[in-house]
Amino acid sequence: MRAIPLVLLSVLSPVLHAQHEPPAAPAALAIAAKAYLLLDFNSGQTLVAHNARERVEPASLTKLMTAYLTFAALDQKRIRLDQGVPVSEYAWRTEGSRMFIEPRKPVTVEELIHGMVVQSGNDASIALAEAIAGSEEAFVAMMNREARRLGLQDTHFVNATGLPHPQHYSSGRDLAELAAAVIRDFPGRYPLYSRREYRYNNITQSNRNRLLWVDPTVDGMKTGYTENAGYCMVTSGKRGERRLVSVVLGAASEAARVIESQKLLNHGFKSYDGVRLYPGRQPVVTLEVFKGTSSKVDAGFLADLHLAVPRGQGEKLKARVESLQPLFAPIQAGQRIGMLKLTLDDQPYREVPVVALENVPLAGVLGRGWDALRILFR
Image (tube, rainbow, N blue to C red; front, side, top):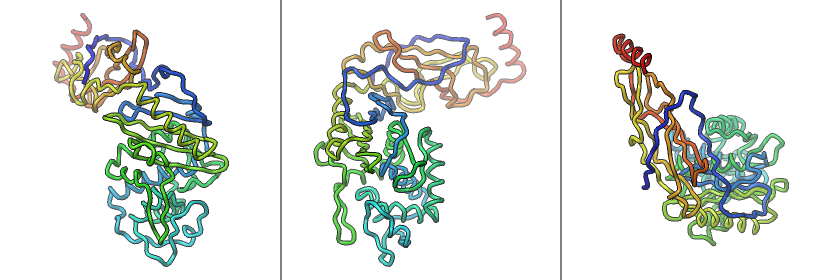
């Protein structure tokens, strides 16, 4: 870990929200797709983007949310892997890619998950939606609630499969954030996305993510296609401690989405370094507090703070913390009380909120009165 020396600056203006966009990529990159994005998983930084906020038809990339809710239902013990699921006529007759489940043939949740993740089965997705929520319609309401909770601002779902509908849309940015949420929140389930094939009902189907055969560092995630959406692909790869998530939307062919996804991943790994700046829940700076039971509060980050920087440029990073002063109690652990401002080669690079690492309760009457005098004569 490389800790950057801090300069503490107290300011009287409100602290700004964090900015997540770094400067432009260090080298030109041409990607043959309507929209694309490359996300650094550890830092949450967008390294490359084009039309990333444009609303598009997500096709089967929709199933990332279907999987997210399915994994959550498993963790919450609302369903079980060995649970039998009745196959409705509606699920059985669903068009598009299929797992080939049948109404009178027993199927388990575990089999359906493999059918959805590996085979991209629309029938499996609907069967899971019905098992979790009672109907696809009720499940879609859950999908949209979860999208709002995850902060997916350009996403709205109408079904659990990705079949075309005018009001069913997402964006490159939202799909990258959704993929990252699946990896982050369900690390024990994520390895399913690296499985190359699955056999059900005497039919073996291969995973459509061809990078699983080409790049050994790629371990997921999902492909999609409709006539309007074109060929789409969300991919994740890990090299050393770094993980990247790429999104390619509207490529011209199945081969093109593979080539462009590989190009994005290679660019991110070769052109950027990953830097762990500060450990989580360790004091980075101590700030003065007024009207509290303590006159100081330790501040830092709740999780390790990572940063992606252009290759070989890490030594040019500088950091300062700006805090809102005077800072008054009560203060809750996790409360934003400052902003870490990073510059690279003396140019603004990124801003990250600094939070209190401990509670500072309100002092008694005498303590508050004394601090009122301290503020008056500062």
